[in-house]
Image 1 (cartoon, rainbow, N blue to C red):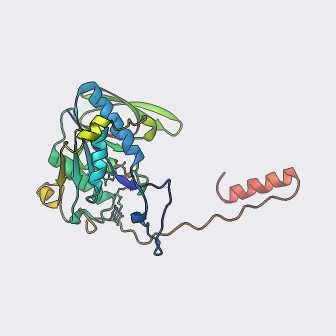
Image 2: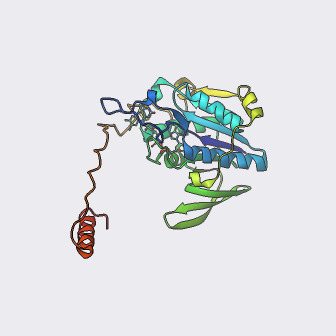
Image 3: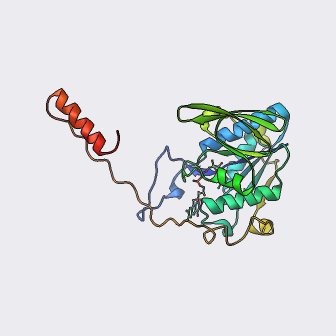
Amino acid sequence: MRIYVCVKQVPDTSGKVAVKEDGTLDRASMETIINPDDMAAMEAALQLKDETGCQVTAVTMGPAPAEGMLRELLAMGADDGVLISSREFGGSDTFATSQIIAGALHYLGVGGEDVIFCGRQAIDGDTAQVGPQIAEKLNLPQVTYVADMKKDGNVLTVKRLLEDGYMTIQVQTPCLLTCVREMNAPRYMTIKNILGCYQKPVRILDYNALKDDPLIDLTTIGLKGSPTNIFRSFTPPKKEAGRILAGTEEEAVEELVSQLVKKHVI
Ligand SMILES: Cc1cc2nc3c(=O)[nH]c(=O)nc-3n(C[C@H](O)[C@H](O)[C@H](O)COP(=O)(O)OP(=O)(O)OC[C@H]3O[C@@H](n4cnc5c(N)ncnc54)[C@H](O)[C@@H]3O)c2cc1C
């Protein structure tokens, strides 16, 4: 049994968000972190490894420095890493990103009791589309918003987070789960694993390695294969200044309610 965890390196949006004059994100001046939901996905995978001894592979698509993030995941306990990286993959939207990652997973082989873990959402792109699209492209069942999970052979019992509660779903492997950060508290790297992380294998899959896979086609990957295009990006306008409502308590409440109705808040 093999577990694949799809992990994205993202700018740390909780720190200083730098925007260039043309309105695009100044990624170079921002710290990068491992996407928080993906840390929960990795922890869930490592818990399965603790129980069953299965192999855990960290998979990322990104530029060459993303290998450093893979090493951190190896130091957490993952067995090996796969870096999907090539000029042809640049500029991909979520359709093309999921096409490439699905192609790489297909090339690596997914079957039997294997499970693919993703985060629910990346904190930079924020679409929550990549996980479900990978599942579709690999023809696998999927459960999103996973808050807990137990595996018994080829059946997973999954607790799925809803807006106002939970639902329990059983799903057969091979399958894909997208995890929420409420799922667990990711473990720290250990000294032993930090010392060993450079001995563990990291494979680089570029366009040449993947081009014969049926899912990899120049018309479905990269900027050319992306059905959506970012037309413009800009910083949202600053919030208006606050206003103190005048009049009696009743008048102020009436005005407040009418303003909230006008703004479609209630
Ligand atoms: C026209 C266009 C051009 C773009 N060009 C670029 C570009 O040049 N460079 C760039 O970085 N982005 C680019 N993007 C953004 C890119 O589409 C998203 O970064 C990417 O598709 C992931 O979407 P998301 O961030 O919303 O992830 P979500 O869908 O929110 O992510 C959900 C989960 O999917 C998995 N996942 C997502 N992305 C990856 C990944 N790369 N590797 C492994 N797992 C992953 C993770 O488990 C993650 O938690 C472009 C987008 C568009 C529309």
